[in-house]
Amino acid sequence: MISTSPVQGGWKRVIMFGSLGAPELIIIGLIVVLLFGVGKLSGLGKDLGSSVKEFRKAVKDEDDKPAPVVQQMPAQQMPQASTPPPPPPAPQGEQKNPNIF
Image 1 (cartoon, rainbow, N blue to C red):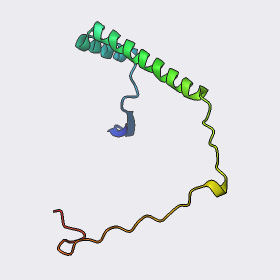
Image 2 (tube, helix red, strand yellow):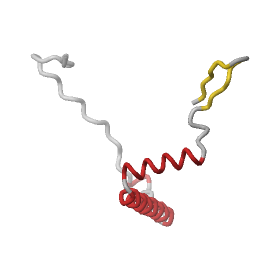
Image 3 (cartoon, rainbow, N blue to C red):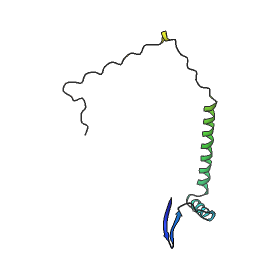
Image 4 (cartoon, helix red, strand yellow):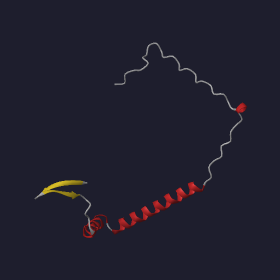
């Protein structure tokens, strides 16, 4: 997010979240470790790694499968498409589109 703020002699451009350095990231990491604990974070990393591994395996398996071959029937053996039957007439006492509200 970019915003502008007044400073002496003009406007200064302030970039939000763009100036995180190593000290800030270390502090954020320590807070996360204190909140969740090392055990949960390692379990989360393990689960994320296994999910990525399964995803890659599934994508690779899909790429290795050959495309199914579709056989076409001769024109004389193809079934003729028929028109669908008309809808039954609505009963005389009911409306076709009742108001549901």
